[in-house]
Length: 233
Length: 233
Image (tube, rainbow over all chains, first blue to last red; front, top):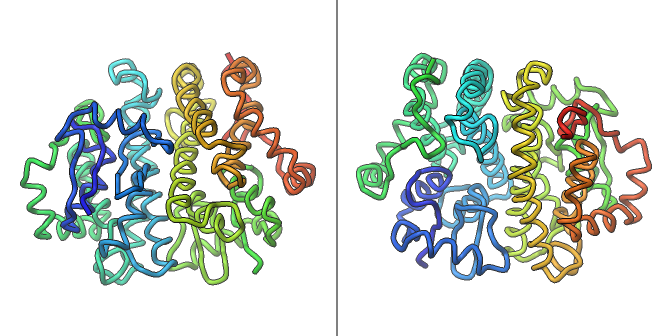
């Protein structure tokens, strides 16, 4: 089956967590808005009786699945990227939902007054929120995932087999390095396990090939992870 | 099986979406932190090899399940509160995750600079974020759910049978009425379907009995929905 992924064509954003899973799995997929334009994506959103609230969404045969973590819940066990047991699947999904919460807080560092105003109109509040984010939220979230990784017995979050959660944690580390190079550099000694996991994900053959291809969109200031010098402390 | 729900004892918060499902289902459950204190909750968080990031979490036999939407994903088909088909379950979960996104934005109206600072230290930004929230985000989110309800053929979001998503939408309408009585009153004529759904959920025997009992915690200014007069426009 050829999947169709629908996501904004110019950013990694939330679509990237799905792309990484499809790429690691070697799945056949079209990145529709990049290949056929935004019109195809908008048409699909309006035509469905069960419309997604927002991209990303995935067409898998007759199914149209929205919400990043929901898409991964569907793909995971089908492509060896999640345990087969109910307990294992729920646990991976729980971690992915916690990553989704963190992603929203990352986004809010540059958009504390809401997603519908420009960054330029909320620079002061963004500075305050970012300071709080690095003081309180990064240690809490990344400290949690570091502990979860330790508890797992390794080498991956689910234990012996890689899962979509590992791929998403790779993206979190890569994104924080892009957006906050100075802050992240200082913080990384507190999360040696996650840094090592990032490197191991990045050196897997399918992921390495993907990152070197033009299918990987570069980080930029339209996405979740934005590099604004004044926020890097 | 007697479930154990773990959540902060003084607020409805995110635990309420789970409570409403358990109550509608007539399930047997303990609300642990309310009955046995916070110590029991903290102990459970620390003892688990698969610890939740935060409450709420549910103990169901040997399973310990965290993240509100994940708990409902588990409970739904077991208690007739979600379709049995994979497509139906994914669709309900997708809607619940969209509700979770909305809940986070509701929370951010009074905490735009982050969850670790007091409201009193972010009143100015809260006013701006709330104005934007009512101008842009409420119409977008509630307009979406109103359309989804229309598309379903009714009377419920999943069609003929009630689901946990209907219970959560009840809570959203009730919460917005509590937190923003003036703004919500003006807005409700744009979402007649959701207002009607709220009333139908509230008059179901198990929900009505729950709302009248002391198991329902009253809305208050420690939860997600807070009534601050200066934010009500």
